[in-house]
Image (tube, rainbow, N blue to C red):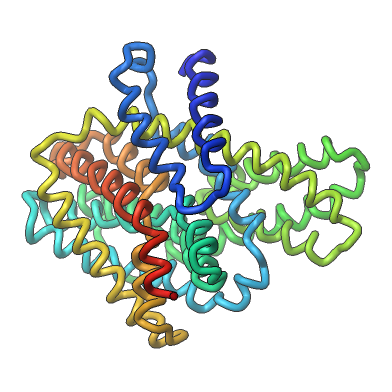
Length: 389
């Protein structure tokens, strides 16, 4: 992307965020993606290309860090069992059930279907969390949805990597090997994130200038990610853990209120800017994959995906922390597909694996992401009010 293109995309994002003055019922990412599809036909934007590395190394660390930093620690404590269960057991069950269903109705193999299911399981409720809060005032459901989303990104990457290696016969499957790798990658990333977050929370005392303290937060967001990736553990979970750790540390210290205020102001600007560019570019990128032949498959898989997520959510929460069917339906409907799914789609596309019929997976998956972001987000407010009135 050229600097001129970035500035224009930012300006378009500014206009859309300005329209959303009340921050109610207005799914900004959905509007941005639809606008991106529209401007993709303008020759000036034809040269824009979104790669998996751009999403993973530039956009995700910052977006994950600000979500984790702003996520209330008390909410995480109160709902920790549900959040962790849905982000681990829930997502694994989702991949198994959805993958098997896809293999039955599609022209791809069972192994490829599981890879596709791993692409479609991470959630990205970037717009619906605020809508749920405004529409119903229910902080618990919003916290469960947001907490699960932060953690299941890391789970999805591990599942995708493992299932792709199995599907392409790079390695065989062993439950114990998979479980060991999963624990190593996940716990290793969390450990690095917690350590980095704790160290930065202490280092901040060596500088009395807010600008320098904010610089430390940038170093923390990307540094924890890069360190974790360098030692082959989850950079996603490292960034999330570092954000939650620094939030916890400053939540305990009243004297750090000025730092939190500065940090909030800076990262809100960063978040809105990155979201504007990312979702506009996703809209531009997604256009070439929206072929007519993919839509019937996408609609059927999308409907089953919502149904499977509801059944799994209901079963998991019934064991861990029973919730009403209304809560479970809302949790299921709020599981939008977004930036992580797009990253995994582009990762598969870059691998160019003809034996898996990857072109079909990429086209149908992009169509499902578009369906999810439009249908689920646009209907989130009325469904929330109806279920929790």
